[in-house]
Amino acid sequence: MRILAAFDKCKGSLSAEAMCALVHERVKKHCPDVSVSSLPQTDGGEGFVSILTLAKGGETRSVEVLDSLGRNRLVQIGFLDIENLRAEVTELLGLPEKGKVALIEMASVVGLADLKKEERNPWKTSTIGVGQCLLKCKEYGVCAFLLGIGGSSTNDMGLGALRSLGVRFFDENRKSIDFPSPETWGSIHSVDSSDVAALPPLKIACDVRNPLLGENGATFQFGPQKGLRIEDKARMEKEMTEMAHLMEQSLPDAKGRGGLPGMGAAGGIGFGLSLACDVSLTGGFSLVSKWFDLESAINRSDLVLTGEGRFDETSLQGKAPCEILRKATKLDKRCVLLAGSVQADAASRFQEENPLAEIHAFGREELSLEENLARAEEFFLGKLDEVIGDHYSNKR
Image 1 (cartoon, rainbow, N blue to C red):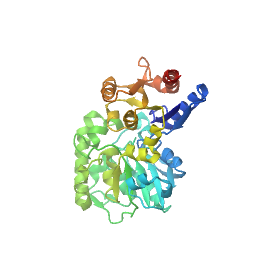
Image 2 (cartoon, rainbow, N blue to C red):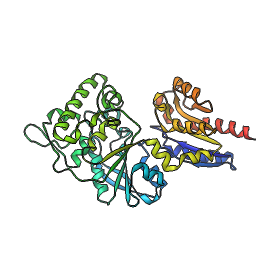
Image 3 (cartoon, rainbow, N blue to C red):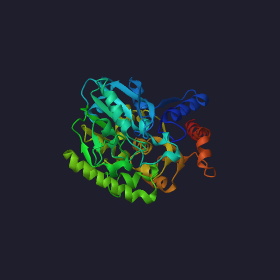
Image 4 (spheres, rainbow, N blue to C red):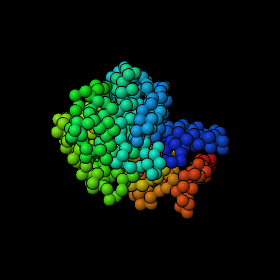
């Protein structure tokens, strides 16, 4: 019997690598004759650099940059040889045959999870550290960047990153605004991009297709989860609209970019960076799937285990665990998703279309979120034992 463990993270409790490791340890302890393969998943957020870099024999290096509130922090950047990537990956990303690519994880620089609850305020957060990462990576002679943009705390259209790359923002008295965040936008009267740094092409891993502005844009769709008060959404949307107009007046390349799919992801980081370098977006799951040759791994397995923190409506919109279930059912494999919590309607609708898939919650509804997070490993292993025991006994 062969099991594939391909888990995404459970935010606030278990990393993707930890969940896959727990499956391996548990199965080997009770069923030593069962083969277990682990392929941790990442949506571009936490784990993006470590999971993708180490899988291809790359290395990580520490660099010091500013976090979203302007404090110094060390982050890990990945570096790997393009020759180590599968041909499907280099073709997807449009990379040259040789050279080095740098992997950057936005969540490790300006991540929401790194801020205390009382610090989560997208009026005050900036992507200035993301731009610093790009400049530091350039020093190592890379020929391309790969940026994962999940889990950010920012909604600044990437203006902070642009400031690091040489774009200047001035108030009406020509005083420089060196830490641009949404609360400063009203003071910005002019923009100077004459000294912007030249960078290699930037590939952004992103499954979000939202535009920059509007009801489906960055502010209305993602602002509240970053700490934006509901009553402030309209005001921030107005500020962002006016700032985007100023950028269009100052940088001709900005015209029309805000309406492109994906420009509203991670607070508009793609919009900002596209004004300074050659930016292209690629689907996060498509990238990871090709990175690991996921379909072949599923095809070799008898049982596919995947999961995440919460299975809900957003899971159906291209998230890795849901896509893994779809691939597994098409290959006629038994597949099980274990999530901390499960939205019943979303699970029911998915299982109607994919009857071979099983979806189970391992959290306890009667307990608080805090206790579920604290006991996540215990509850996960308990549900895992049920699934493995059931499948193994059926194979005898």
